Amino acid sequence: MKRVLVFIFVFLLVSLVFGAYAEPPKETLSLQDAFVKVSKDVGQAVVSINTEHTERYQTRYYPFAQFEDQFFNDFFNDFFVEGPQREFKGIGLGSGFIINKEGYIITNEHVIHGADKITVTLPDTREFEAKIIGSDIYSDLIVIKIEPKGELPYVKFGDSDNVQIGHWAIAIGNPFAFAVKNPEPTVTVGVISALHRSLPRTDKRTREYSDLIQTDAAINPGNSGGPLVNICGEVIGINVAIFTLSGGSEGVGFAIPINSAKKIINDLMQGKKVLYGWLGVIIQDIDANLVSYFGLNDKTGVIISRIVDSSPAENAGLKPGDIIVSLDNEKIKNTKDLIRNLLKKNVGEKVDLGVIRNSKLYSIVVEIGERPEDKTVLAQNKIEPQAVQKDIKSWRGLEASDITSEIAQRFKLSAESGVAVISVQPMSPAERSGIRPGDVIYEINRMPLKGIRDYLTAIDKVSGDALIGTSKGYVVLKEN
Image (cartoon, rainbow, N blue to C red):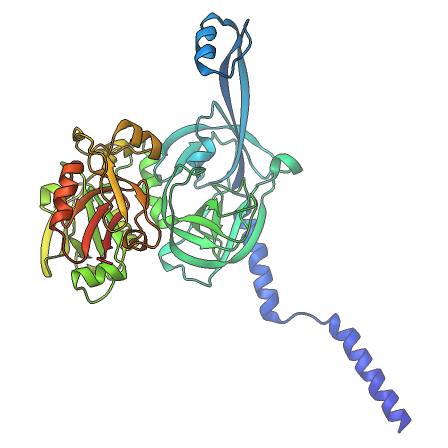
């Protein structure tokens, strides 16, 4: 019996020892080989980009002390003595990838922005000075070119429309080339976490991104402009941003789908200006309160909260409060759907919008216009504010005022018509509806407001729930 037990013990021990060193399953080796092949094939075409830019500033010598009172500072600063001009050399770092044997390279526009000198380093240590061929701030894409000396490796494009959540995602770039002094790119692996993501503007990010691919493959600062590839080594996206609280990678990275970038890249390579389709509407998703107010079946569609003057939308007869439910017979579920479909259209192309107005479905044809500069898009008619009326009574928990220079400065407002919300009572209908101090109300129950007089007239006519057009979109302000 003891011999049997000893034999069993020895057998198990040997099994454990040799089992630990057993060859991995073929499936594991096959996947591992795929990652190695992608790293070698694509990695050789991924480049490090270093930029230099010069900033000049004027030095000044002040013969007088500085005062706490700004008036005295401004007075005595008239007597400053100018010193010599100084120059500050700034550097930028990023990644990019070669797309053909002629030496064209794709990266993010923000990687190159403002550069006086662009240096491209290949993984084989070759260095080239690059020149800008074309750039587009809106898409954050730029094409630069090097003059090749010898053969150049380049990537192969995939089809980002076929990408699905859960697919393998491989991010390649060189985020720390300056630190490790090695031009060979790094590889991180993850999956496609989500599709059609949007990133709005923030204080730290001046660009607005839409229809992005989200991945948990680690993307670090300096990875910007590098490729996101699939398991076959095809480029499916261009790494553009990370979402982070710490400043490093936290498993949430974003990439521009390559299919969205292809047309832009072709235009930039040919020196063309990139044109974007534009309706001239400010839109918002539909919430439960709006569903109830308009008597809709569900939250499907987008509501037009404002229309830019002289825009394609205004010329076609669209109105604030219209609900867009389809574009060329394709169902529109939300704002992302509408934006994504519009970006596929060309300037001058006509589209058929399915629009609900007053509970009836209409077909409205709109000719796509060219997207103007941001300042023009946001511009509205400038209307002189009406005289300020003080001691305005509270209405459903909010108090409003004309937009005076003081109010505009206090709340950092640019609107010149409508009324500004200056206070909201806690737990009031106004607060529950989402209205906050600093919001601008420009419409009540479809009645446009130039100023406080129109506001007082409008609220006197309200009975029951009210549809309030604000700078953030429509809200339903309930009676209590």
